[in-house]
Image (cartoon, rainbow, N blue to C red; front, side):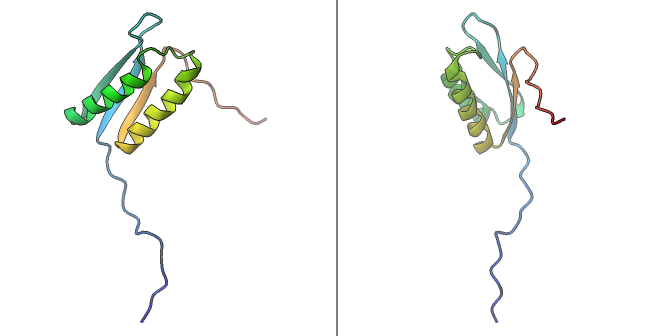
Length: 98
């Protein structure tokens, strides 16, 4: 007896492996600090090294920052880390439809 092919079995999402907060310190280098509230130390430290390598000389207004921020976001997603940004300014409001 054959059964119709189905998509991949849905598994519940895994809990995050850790939490990291990327904090902008200001216009004088070093610009960034990466803090963690929980998670395995080796995972957090490896992520911190990769993220700082991408951000070390970039203030948030630098055009390269947007591309590197997206790379940091993808890296956090691959590592299953909760990522939070503290740029010292309010987030851009979502466009509302009238």
